[in-house]
Image (cartoon, rainbow, N blue to C red; front, top):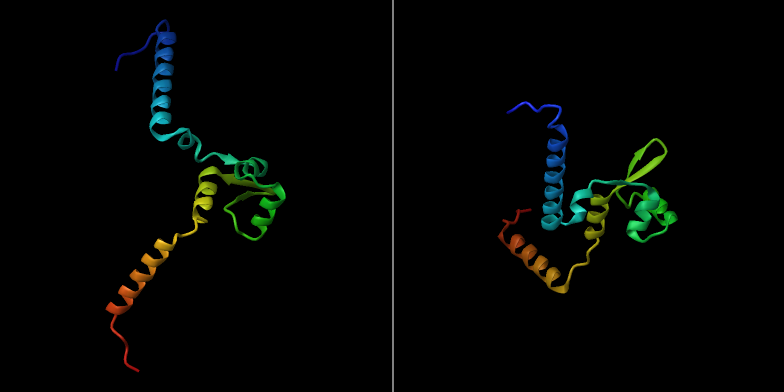
Length: 117
């Protein structure tokens, strides 16, 4: 690697900046802008806005341990990715999903040997 002189420094920094902008553009285009700040920590008011809930509802869910939260001292922090997964976790199953689960359960129960009493 060649040594950079002081005179070359502004050009090199500009080139680095241009490359970073291209990388960010590529990431946003291919993975969406949400992936760039998935791990962003949010305050309770930001989390309430993100979830379209009131802050009192958020406090209630925290007290009932129904929502993923990080606590540092008296402050509550929420990770965007965890909240998104929490929302997806509440997905209701379709009738077809329930039938498939029931079929799979019955198949596994039939293949297990029964214990003698």
